[in-house]
Amino acid sequence: MNKVKIKSKNLNVHYGQKQALFDVNLDLNEKEVTALIGPSGCGKSTFIRCINRMNDVIDICKVTGNIEIDGVEVNDKNLDVVSLRERVGMVFQKPNPFPKSIYENISYGPKIHGKGDTKSELDEIVENSLKKSALWEEVKDRLDEPGTSLSGGQQQRLCIARAISVNPEVILMDEPCSALDPIATAKIEELIDDLKKTYTIVIVTHSMAQAVRVSQKTGFFHLGKLIEVGKTEKIFKNPDNKMTQDYITGRFG
Amino acid sequence: MSNEHTVKSYEEELQNLKDSLIKMGSLTESQMSDSMDAIIKVDKDSIDKIIKSDDEINKFRSVIDIQIMNLLVKRAPMAIDLRETISSLKISQDLERIGDLSKSNAKKIKPLPLDLPEELLSNLKRLGDLVIKQLNDVLDSYINKNFDKAKTVWEKDEQVDDLTNIAMQSVIDFLSKDKKNLDFSTHLIFATKNLERAGDHVTNIAETICYLIKGEYLKGSRPKGKQAQE
Image (cartoon, rainbow over all chains, first blue to last red; front, side, top):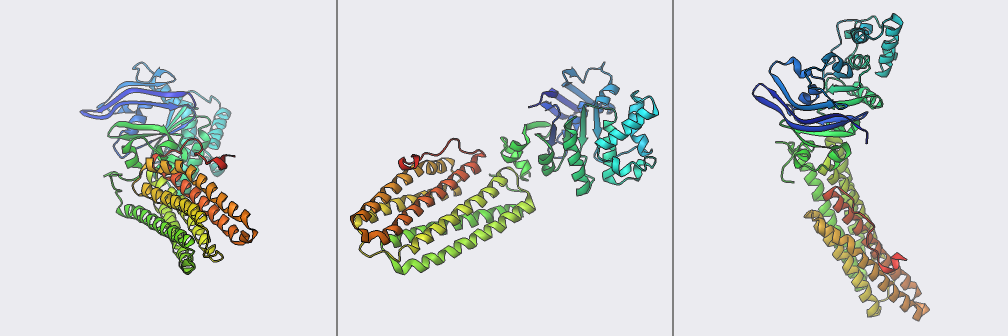
């Protein structure tokens, strides 16, 4: 078992009057993939948005309780959010490349974070990031073309390349394959398998099969509560909680 | 499981699979009982009927195979549904093998003389009755999802082993009295061994049912009869 990278303790989130997360206690292991599953509105995306303080941008959102990365409190008001997001990258449901060239999509992050001072350093970061995201071979001859000219699956891998270009420790993925076809999905899944050697990955997915394929640990959320968390194999073969079983077997009314 | 699947046809498909397995089990049980009766009575007229009933059991096996493949491909079952599907595959294989052994025993009746000594038959009958009871109990435990009952069947295989040894010994004693008995005694030895093997398949089914219910394999090796331990 790898060491715990991210630890949430009694994490609560409110959107105005509405409570979205209730006392979530969840440990995420380093260099492992954790899948979060549950019906829409169960709080799984809200949870991962706490890890890089994405909820800060929502005025009515209030986060209480603790969430730590390597023992350091993320919710600390004095914490530098920009450097937090450098350490915790994010990939969204819909690929969202910047309206810039493929090259600039990758080089933008390192530039604003003060990495890669020279052109050759940036070139190296771009090449490495694209190689790690298994996109290099497909785009190396057209780095000046707009990122948006790529196919959906390629765009998503570009977004993953962009996330890893600043050398993060954690990558959050919020349904990264829901807009992709099966082949593009397979490529992303294979990529996740490879990336977990270097990064701690948290993936929100509606596909049980995907959760089984890519993750080592799975957490099931329902109505803002973490109902069950355990080894992925155990959750999908023999979960302890009846609600988990009902959800994954399609018995939810 | 009290809750039903949101998708009704999924619920039906799983139920149909369970129904097929129960029917196959019931046919296997009748066939074994008929085959045992026929041996004890040396009833040569029943042989063909018993052999034929094996076709029916094999047909169920094919139906169940198709039902399982459809479930896997259409529903990608998870948790209890996955265990139910995979267990059905394993149980149907064991039932089919039990059917083959009953058929094989029916074929052994032909060369038997009509005046077999009482003691030989009674020892074989005791073994046969126990294996039939074990099969009946294990099928009950499947229908009622009764873990304790399945585990008891698993543990009682020890008695099957012991009765096998007793039945085997009485055939050997009989054989040693007169070499002329060699021909049909060999058939009785095979018939006894077949019953023991059928008992082993029942034990496999019991193990599968325990896994199906609890999601964990039984720990340790099952209790074994005296001879089997050596």
